[in-house]
Image (cartoon, rainbow, N blue to C red):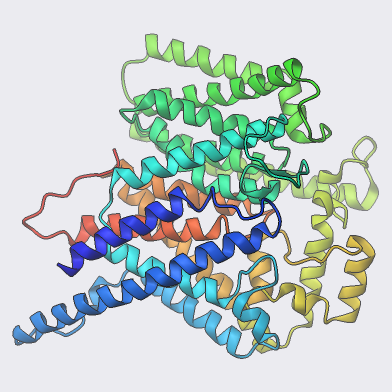
Amino acid sequence: MSKKAGNLFTTAYLLLIFGVYPLYMKQGYVDIGKAKYQFFIRCSLGALVIFVFIGFLYAARQIYLRIRQKHAPLIDWSRLSAVDLFVILYATEIFISYSYSNYREEALWGTDGWYMGLALFLTLCGLYFFISRFWRVQRLVLYVEMAVSGVVFALGILDRFSLYLLPIEVRQPSFISTLGNINWFCGCLSVLAPPGICLFLLGAKKKIGCGFYALLVFAVGFCQGGSSIFLFFAALFYVLFWIALKKRAWILNFLLLLSLWGFSAQLIRLLRTVIPQGYNYDVDNLCAYMTDSGITLWIAIFALGTFIFLQWKWKGELTEKTRRLLHRIMILLPLGIIFCWLILATVNTRIEIPGLAQKEWLKFGKEWGNGRGAAICSSLQMYKQMPVFHKLFGVGTDCFSAYAYSLPEVAEGLRDFFGANRLTNAHNELLTALINTGILGVLFFAGIFITFAGKCMKEGRRDPGFYLFAVPVVCYFVHNMVSFAQILNLPFLFLILGMGEAKRRALIFAPATDTYRSHIL
């Protein structure tokens, strides 16, 4: 009975967060970070109270049943997964970090406007355990997530072309849809969009709807204005192609997705031509370049032509030998590109190669990455000055800014470069975590998601539904190489973590009388 109640309440909670939270606003963009945070933390803490009560009833019953079995242990430790252990270790580590922080108030609730403090992280860890134990995977949550995120992305396109459906008094081009500025928008998109796009790749029954959803995601990515979205695109297509190599049908669907990606850029180009005065963002960026150039059009034509050719001529499947070869190439090629970029950027930084000296992305320095170079240099300087204990455990969750501006030399450099704007993170997920939670925090945090994604990719051989949970993790971390955790992406990532673990536990620990089946595809 308690298990059923837990499933019903967990489903209701997931529907609330995935169905309402992305749309929730209070006084428009005024204090949107605070409004979003208060909505999430109040709903989640209230849910945790009920979860604890249901969990207590369930645990009491399990202990009673085990007592009746003379030789059964009270706790079955074998049911703790590697992901569970990493979450426990991470929660313990950030609590120690908070306990020895010099900025406890900030570490508890987080920096004003960001709220990525201990309270949020422990809440997310708690939610993970209850969702992974009580939820039974259902299509409804996924469909609601796709429908609501689709509305959010559509509003983003309309806002970018000055078509405002929501009556908000204070507006500026860097704030779109119901998610705040474009950094928050891209961060949220990198987590919410992949499951729906994966459904198209894996041949979901509602393929037309999934195709339209993918087109919407790609279109808003091209028009929102932030260049970091191309890291998301690269990660998404990379991992989708890795998965697609397993089946001919998936390879064909991948080519269709690639063509949709290219045509979506041309769709935005068409809209900018038809509504020239409507587009309200700077055109001196990678998004504008990719839409104005013919590159995306030729990619779309090539992908569509290849799809037609393979559909007509290719009837078999890739051999295991060919698949392994392609996977090896996929591993070595990006490593080679990164290595060449590092060499070229290092040389260009030191001697300024003619023709490349003005290319910021090929020159290390404070200007690199629209000021991210300054943030990274300052972060490394901060970590270097930390005592050994804080190098291990950090200065406290979300205390990056408090610590940075307590160091005179670092603070002076930040003020010289950023002026009155206060730097609250390194614009790199793991580097920010290194300051806030130390090297142990980084290892445990990364361990959670590396282990989880690895298990989901492995289980995907038996049930492709697991890919829906692995791809968002990859996209999140690749995108956040130049971005940050915030209240509109990390909470969703932890919920996906719990949902994926719930599916995995159902596959492993399902009673012998039950027949396991995928509830996703």
